[in-house]
Length: 183
Image (cartoon, rainbow, N blue to C red):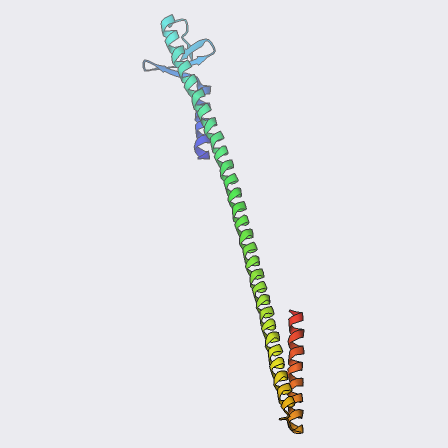
């Protein structure tokens, strides 16, 4: 595209500098107010009508050359604007991609945080369940021991076993309490 624009300007430059006009099959060259044919001044030999026709043709070609130059300049300006717009679009697209990546990263972080919180909640719930279970076991076995002791159905060996058993349940309860307070 650039090559065509450059060639167009060079061609128009040569055409404008030559200032040649073809009229009725004859080529005339115009320099200032004089008209030359084959390098000889023929201004005085041409009729005023013919001079005006040749000059009109020259002016038309001059206007056409200027219009072509303006069109080429406008095309170059439009090309630059299109390139700038493409660069701006590429920059905006890259910014959008970065924003998407950032949002995805934040979403992953939030999901990870949610999983951690769920895991922590599950651990707390399990610790609470273990505590309640240990409390119930101790209470039930304490009541059973007290009931057997009141009725006098415990031998000294059985009583010792029951006390050991109750101590074990108390230790389990303490462990469950510690676990619950940690979580």
